[in-house]
Length: 342
Image 1 (tube, rainbow, N blue to C red):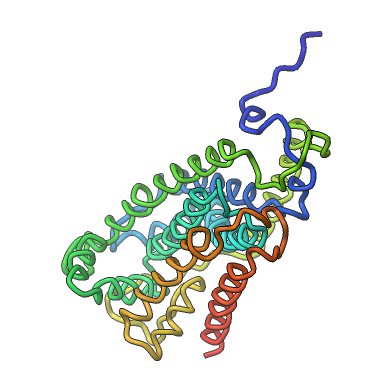
Image 2: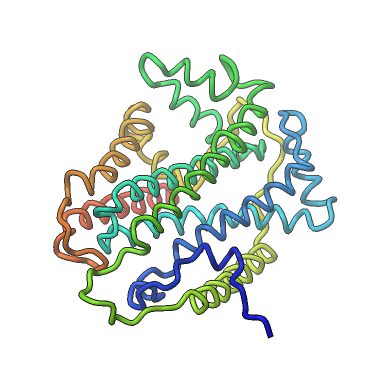
């Protein structure tokens, strides 16, 4: 019998990883789940492009056709929608795991920033995908969201025209958002994800505690692939189940930019909507989000530059970073819940 030759998927993994840091209790599989969800989004998104028509007159109608007339179109669309929602949560949790375990320290600082960029890309992909529904639920995302960009001093009007395709929302806007969704965001996200994975390998694999000698237990590549395959099947089964039980939102065609009786932000930007109730648009929608992102970026460069505490949950060396991340995410969750109850 000829010896088994590892396939390409096997070669994406290192020969072995430390058993402690490779356990589910350490990583919760969040990085791998993020990659899996992105692949689901890419596959379902490709199928949707065959039927979606990116014009104001036909966008919402084409989604109706996908949902009610195309064979299994409802399932493909639901999978795309729920994978996108899950990815926001999983990527955010992955970021918290990295911060709480000190995995952002040298030599992984650059990869930590790439991870933050992927979180921003995930949010913007969800935002543009939300707009592409072009129904009455997208008013806040399109009109209010783009007007926040318009409020930026000096360059606001210029950025607004680049985003919506003109001086006001019109026929070019749907095509422009379609282009942003596919090529301005999804393609760069793919590049960043590949770079992120390459950096993990080049920086020594998963962040782990330094050890003397090579006697620490390790997980071999074959076992790692089997575990990841089982986890992927479980996640896919759960995703298919929720896609069957809970359909993606779909509403009547929007009369944009006319506002409906009640416009609400997508759930992942409800905290911005809450801030807009009491702060100027440029502060609530631009300065605070940029400030939060900048604060997270400088964690490994200014706030915690120590080399100890890597791969230790809630390590003392990273206490300041952990407090900052906890306060930020707690504030976002509280603002979101307040807005949901408003």
